[in-house]
Image (cartoon, rainbow, N blue to C red; front, side, top):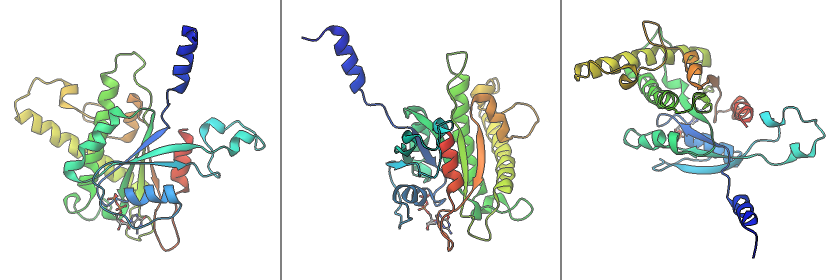
Length: 266
Ligand code: GDP
């Protein structure tokens, strides 16, 4: 029979390690399923209304460099190796949203979150009201996700805190001329999240939890009067980036910058 240490070694070696995983989250209709399909098949295809999370194995395109390969020479054969990863498509429909939030804490090897927003559903701040557009919805869901990530940090046992969970806000549908460019979408979301934060705090106070501390109230970002900015999330190991693109469109997809972001996390 094998010595005990060899048993241990073989058992350990056989334990499957999970692939680097990215969650694809966002309001319904923002283009999550289209994006996952495009990344998987290289071409968009008709989508269906998803009812349960769907995991899809995809590979980094050979034109995108992974961060771990940054210092390899162009002739290094390992550069040609496939870089597989998992995309988990989560449903965006109101009642099904808890899937997304539950996944945040239960995903092994979570490398990041891709939050897809329909940038054409959001008016620039000078026109239109948030309640009529997708802005309120997109901001509320994003607020809740960032709050889960913040709590993960503030309740962590180790002094270093949990590892980074970077968030990519994919400003999708930029092929449409009504779409808000990424920098404006960023400001609109920050403003609206500030509003969500305040509404939530008031709601809890009137519900009679006057003595709740900041964490129980679930105040996102820095306290006090300052307005919410994504930059504040870096304090809790959650770097947020807003990057524009489109999955569909008459001139074809434009998703290279999203791939670059994914590659930079591998
Ligand atoms: P999901 O609910 O987030 O999974 O969204 P879907 O992937 O089902 O997409 C919702 C709708 O938006 C579909 O009709 C897509 O064809 C459309 N769509 C997705 N991405 C784009 C895009 O980049 N540009 C345009 N014009 N339409 C898009």
